[in-house]
Structures are given as structure tokens and as C-alpha cells.
Length: 119
Length: 414
Image (cartoon, rainbow over all chains, first blue to last red; front, side):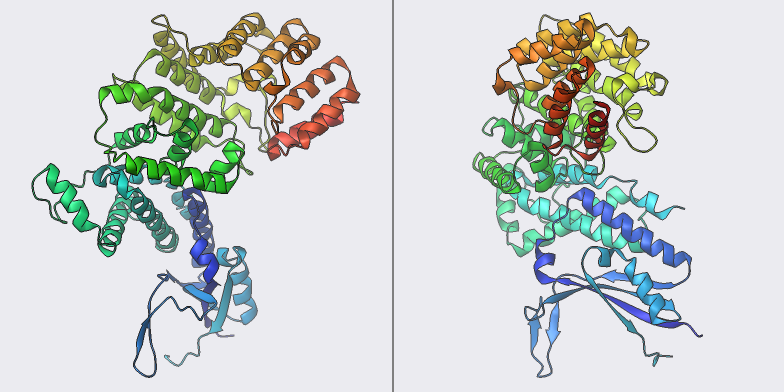
């Protein structure tokens, strides 16, 4: 089976993101658990791109040409970051996502296969 | 290369205190909220970037630059720059945003900040709370745990402390010799508590937190290196920490359980630390004044001198605890004396001493009190009483390692 690429999109609730103020030690523990997760799948070759975290605010360009500032109050969930994975099946992608610290911390991970149109 | 080990090599807690102290020194205590937010934000960035892309070559430098840039952004947004310029330009030549003399973070920025935290306008509890938050990187929940109080109380305490310091318009650079002398005792107390929290942690996972002990030792070392703070009591405090630090490793067994003094393998003690402790205790023994640090260090020194637990000089230790209790009649000293008495004259002597004290000495929720009484009755073979006391202690939600120990003792009381 040819390997497919999957996009992981990390989402968390707005309310939680706003009140998320971990202590330095908690941040360090979080960093270590992300490092362990990423390191494991980089080594296995299944992590194509560990991705990045997103800033908490941004802008939206609407179809009518109006640009508004984020964060986007109408969205219940905030986009927190992304990674790209390369595995054969959805099942394998889900298994990797289950080990991700974002999932363990109560955030959701949206898993989407890349259509591969870019070749 | 073990990526995860690398990620935990630089203590965020330590970096937090260092950065807050350095940036506050540059901008003044009034900007403390902005400084703390900027440092928090820089650590968040580090957390996201380092886990994904590895460590930068100079992590402390990276954090300092990132915090500083973040701070400049925030102040610019809040339009605070204009005000800061005005204040600063009154003091010195015209300063522009770009040529503010950002000092490189110095070790003793933190010591300086510690003295700022100990402003006499704040109560002792507020001083400690404030220092733990800004200097030692504790969050409100962790401080609440250490003080056995609610997070809301801690938040209130912090807000009030910051308001007070703002009103007093403190400049961290302006610490006169008399201010330093006036605040030294509070600084010692904070370092003592910080060490204790490391040695006997409230943390659910770790009952020993070596990083906190190391931080306390490091800051105390700065105190003894500075002529105006290297008083005999500071030296005694330093000796006390070294004696305890020398025995830290032996307090934990292979499976992470707690090992008490009588069961510790004395070959595991770090004798170089203990030896240095004796050097400082000798130096501390000049002058007329005996402080609680002298007494506590002397007690710990007695334990370190005993070749085995059986050879402990309980007579001397009992005398020292009696002096200590007279100087500071607290539950912890009372309990410790009862243990010394129990070894010296038998468990009943310890129980008698505790029963003689007023009940106000046993603070509510202090699980060590019934735990010790339980242990003394167990040794007398009064198992029903012992079990009742162990139950009482267990009901006070002790930390996991101590809970295990108490449950074991309860099982043995038949």
C-alpha cells in the first residue's frame, strides 16, 4: 500500500485557551511530552513535518472583501497548530494521534488525508 | 541524542525567575505584570518551537531575547513606552527605545529581586507568595498547596502585593544597605521554605524536588558570597541546607518510595556536601547570637556525625530541640522533640511531652501530628490506639509517598 499523507489539526476550546496559564514547570513537562511524541515518529519516519503552533489571533478575509480581526468569536474551537504524518491507513494515523499530548490534554485532533493533488 | 532529556535540561522554573528579575531590573517594578506576561509568553513559544525543531544553541539567550522582544511589543501596544521614556529620561540622558541599556541577565538580579519581594510594607505571607510566584516560577495552584489555602486566596494576595509595591514606587536598583539588613531575615525565611518545599514536597508525583533544593542552595550561596548578607545566621542556614542536601539521594528508594532516617544507607550520603556543611557551621559559630538556623543545623550535624542510626546522640539532639521549641514553639519542633525523647527515654516519654502541650499546637490538617502519635503508640504495642491515629493521619490527605508509608505502618499495628 502506498503511504498517504495526513494533516493533523489541533483544536482546543476558546475558553480553555484563554484560561490556560501553566506554570513554568508544567510548560516544561508539556514540552518534554511533545518532544517525546515528535521524536518517536520522526525516528520511525512517519512524521513528515512536526508543523507549528499558531498565534492566538489573526485575520479573516471574507468573500465580500472585508477583513476582520480574529480570534473568531463565533468559533467554539480555536485552531492551535498542525503537523503532517505519513502512514498507510487512517487507522495508523489515528493510532499516532492517540499518543499525541494534545489529545491527552483534552483537545481534539482533526485528522484529514491530503488529497495529493499537489503531486 | 536523547531529545527529551535535552528538553528538560534547562529548568523553565529557574529561567522564569532569572528573566523576570532581569527585565524588572531594567523597567522597574511597575511593569511587573507586563514582564511576567512576556516571560510566560516566551516560555510558551519555546515550548512549541523547541519540541518541534530542537533546542537553539543558546537557550537562555534565546529566552532572554524572546522575552525582551515580547515585552517591547506589549509595551508599545499598551503605549507605555512614552511613560517609561519620561521616567527614565528624568534619571539619565535621553533614552530611546533602541538604546535602553538592557543589562545582560546577571545572577544577582534574582537576589536583588528577592529583596524587593521582601518589602516591609508586605506581610510575611505576601512576601513569600510574591517571591515564589515571580522568582521561583510557582503558579497560584502550587503556592496554594504549599500554604494549605485556596487558589483564590493566593490570587488576592498576589494582586494586593503588586498594588502595594506599585504604590510604594519601588525601584529594584535602589536597595540601600539598611534596607538589605532590614529584609535579610525575610529573605532567609523564603529560602528556607523553598528548600523545605523541595525536601518535603506537596507535589502529587514527587515528594522530593531536587530543582527547588538546588535553587534554594544557589540563592543562599549568593547571600554568603555577599559581605553585607553573609551573617552568621545566613551561614548556619547554608550549612543546614548542605547537610540535608547531602542526604537527599538516600531519602528515595529504587521504586521512588520514601526512606526515613533510621533506614537510610549512610554510604549513599554525599559526604562532600556534608563536609562543606560542617565548614560553614563552624564559620557560623562566631558572635553571641544563636538563631533557629544554628540550632537546626546543629541537630542535623548530630545526625550526620553518627556512624549509624543506633549511635545517634539523642541526648544532645533532645537538648537542641528543647532550645528550638523554646525559641519557636511550633508543632513541628514539638513533634521532633517527641521523637528525640522517644529514642532517649522510650516512646511513652514522647507521648507525655506531646500530651502536655496545648492543643493549639496541633494545627488542623497537619497529618504529621497524628502520624507521630500513631508511631509512638505502635512502638509501645498499643495497636488499637496506633491504628486510630494512623487513620486520623490518612484522613488528612497526606502526599502519596507518605500515605503509602502510613498505610504500611497501620498494617503493621496488629
